[in-house]
Length: 147
Image 1 (cartoon, one colour):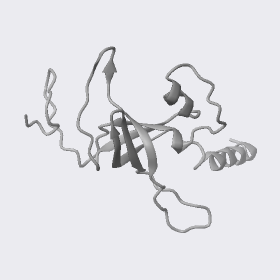
Image 2 (cartoon, rainbow, N blue to C red):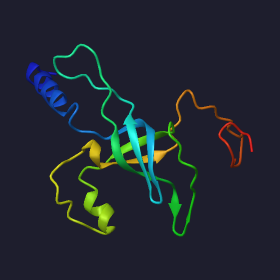
Image 3 (cartoon, rainbow, N blue to C red):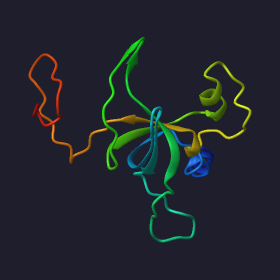
Image 4 (tube, rainbow, N blue to C red):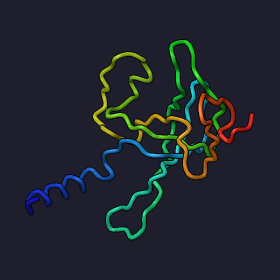
């Protein structure tokens, strides 16, 4: 690459870092509502602010819709507990109007890829998760294999 290309790439990456969010792990810190499922989430990725030497936790994200799989009139739900891991997915535009109206909407708010427009998908495993995965078929029960 040329020096100009490297410089431009570095500028773009530097500008986007910390401003554009896509997906990251998180942990439920509070169950706000079970119906509909709404939680507060602590993002798992820390941030390094300009001029600081150490990374710091990001602020907790309040009122995040929690997603369970739904297929038409059928779905899978489970208890929602503080400490559960989730995958935070950040919408490209504000989801506020869509959540309130539930149909095609004008987002009406200019923010993009903002952490306040996350949804959480339950069950993102990490190394601490103990899985008992069957060799074939499907297993319904606790992730550790117990009934």
